Amino acid sequence: MLGLMQDQPLLISSLLAHAQRHHGDTEIVSRRVEGDIHRYTYRDLADRSQGVAQALDHMGLAFSDRVATLAWNGYRHLELYFGVSGSGRVLHTINPRLHPDQIAWIANHAQDQVLCFELSFLPIIQAVQPHCKTVKHWVALCAPEQLPADCAIPNLLSYESWIAGHSERYQWPVFDEKSASSMCYTSGTTGNPKAALYSHRSTILHAYAAALPDVMALSARDSVLPVVPMFHVNAWGIPYSAALTGCKLVLPGPALDGKSIYELIEAEQVTYAAGVPTIWQMLLGHMRPLGLKFTSLNRTVIGGSACPPAMINAFRDDYGVEVLHAWGMTEMSPLGTLCTLKNRHLKLPVAEQLKIRLKPGRAIYGVDMKIVDSQGRDLPWDGKSFGDLLVRGPWILKEYFKGEGGDPLVQGWFPTGDVATIDADGYMQITDRSKDVIKSGGEWISSIDVENIAMAHPAVAMAACIGVAHPKWDERPVVVVVKRPGLELTREELLASYEGKIAKWQIPDDVIFTESIPLGATGKMQKMKLREQLADYRLPSQ
Ligand code: AMP
Image (cartoon, rainbow, N blue to C red; front, side, top):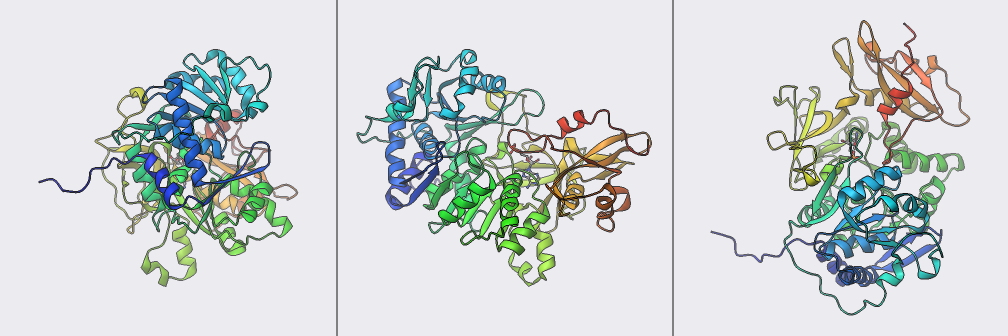
């Protein structure tokens, strides 16, 4: 017997229709590429997103055709989020920090028909245009008068003239909720990038879950700043959860430096912000010397890389901001776990609570996870046993776009490539990326633990721990450190700070001071590149 409830597909357009009707006057504020602040409302967003949908119809784009974006977090990008997916096409967000060759490669692989880009990315477009075989239309996210006179891009339109004149009422089409809605290519540290292809259903379920109180806890009373880019895993789904809850949205554009972010938080009375640790490092780096405080921010979700405990403590103790440590990945839409306490933890001493809060947390409903050993056998949830982390759920990838890389699943589970422990309460802790694990004398050393201790030193701005080959121990850890400007630190001082915090054999053999650590297009440390740079390095004992 089937249930007798209405069968309405879960479509992204319904989020926008809801925001338009119930939160029509709520603000969306964007810092534009030009530097000025643009403001409008969900009602305006809905009107203009319909303009996008109709402009695509007008161009003759078919259902599921790909529309690419090369854009910062801003209102026009948001309109493309809803207009492209809502009308049944697939939004392909491209990371502008990729090399032009990679951009051309993924635009061809995705078979993008239209490419919408920030005018400031014109040099990238000029480099890739001759190589993008499928792109028929190029749309610059600007007004017609801003279009450069002669930039050698064929079929170039300004976004404003493209969506203008389509103001008649538009009916969002209704189709199968399993239809593709957007796509994002993974960082692709080895081989060519592969794309996760999200559906309307997976996106809505993820947006619902993300808004829950023990996840991002978004509400109509919040002013939300996604610093996490809209070109990377849909800004962690925040644009969708924002429309679902009707919170005010604040979009930072290209100005991601500490000063600009701080000013935006204060000016727009942001209550909630989301970003990767490197961004918050810059923010705190700006605030500390000037003695600045927040007047509205009360919580921030940090993920994408391990959030150093020192950062969680600084936000809490110095700024009264609760850090929600989260873990996820492109293949997971991205949210997998987020750290909030359970009721009985509230009785624990603050120091004990803090230990829990440092972990990326427990699984969100919708994500099933487990850890296994090298033979695929389940490992116990004791907080000590560590193994490969596998996940499954309705917003987790089952196959890459075009079947690239074959069947990625292991008996129905997606292998994340992360190594983790899970404790008896279900709190997961990442110890490493499986390819970054350091094996010394037959024992594993967590590079994240080693990095976190270094990051707790006030003179350390960034730290990466890598394994270096050793004839006796197989590998030994060394820590590569970028010092904070103007502060002094010696190798001996830093190594002394490890005493008593981890086992003696886990303490790095050496400290290498450097000017910078290579970061990938999504702000993650590129340890493979770092290992290449240090190919000639020899341990002090050798
Ligand atoms: P991406 O798909 O580019 O977003 O990268 C996903 C990867 O980032 C994960 O598989 C983890 O290795 C890493 N990651 C994300 N969040 C965390 C976290 N909170 N702690 C440690 N690593 C993380």
